[in-house]
Every structure is written in structure tokens, then in C-alpha cells.
Image 1: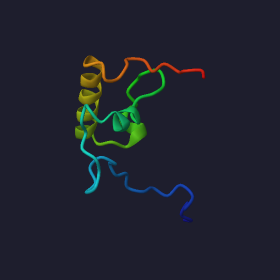
Image 2: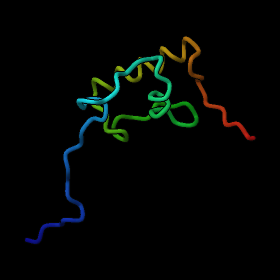
Image 3: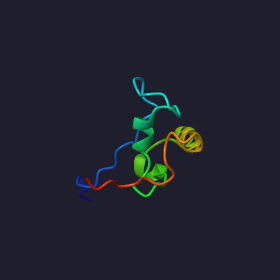
Length: 80
């Protein structure tokens, strides 16, 4: 049987669990904003390939930064 090389499966790795990856912190808004949509929803781990442990840390950090008003609950698009 011929193998289908176009849809070859590869192992998914967590971008936050690598050796030189940044630490998840509620003050790091640049990192946290990468995992939030324009409407303010947290992007699920099946889309971002983040491990379950790091996704939990990520969501806690996002919620903490929202509570401390470092991030807004909904991103506002500015028309300039």
C-alpha cells in the first residue's frame, strides 16, 4: 500500500515547554496577547499546541492580568 506523504503526521511540541521558551507570567503582556483573540477569548490548546499544564498556567495568567487591569477583557480595535 502506498503511503500518503502529503498528510504525514508529526509530533506536536508545546511552544512553552521547550528549553529556551519564555516563562508564563501575568506581567508579560506581549506573550499573553499572542494567546488571546481580537474579541478577548483565550485560544484553545488544540489550536496553539500548548500542553495541558502550560495552558492552565496561561489561562490563569491571562485572567490575573485582566483582573489587575493590565489587559482588557475585550480588545478594542483603534481606527487611526
